[in-house]
Length: 80
Image (tube, rainbow, N blue to C red; front, side, top):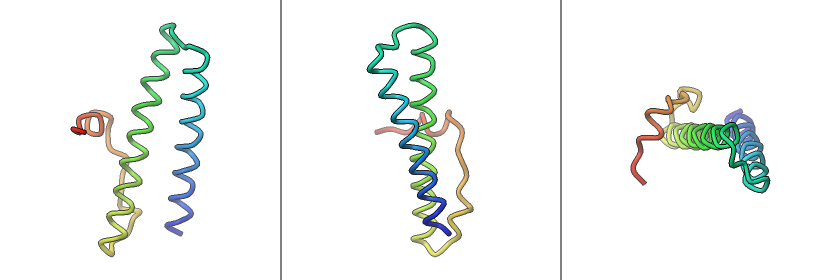
């Protein structure tokens, strides 16, 4: 079951990345295009964070379904 949810999450990431690439290739320089690119960046960061949480919980022998999507203010505040 965990792998199914992780796979679904990864498929969503792929869809978001495809949309992001499409916007970049179109040269989305207008305000709506730039806003959508920023929204995609945040959503992708949230997806990757959720996937990392799920994997960490599973590795610790806990239920990966305990992982929750964290707010943008949290995931965007991480230092790289």
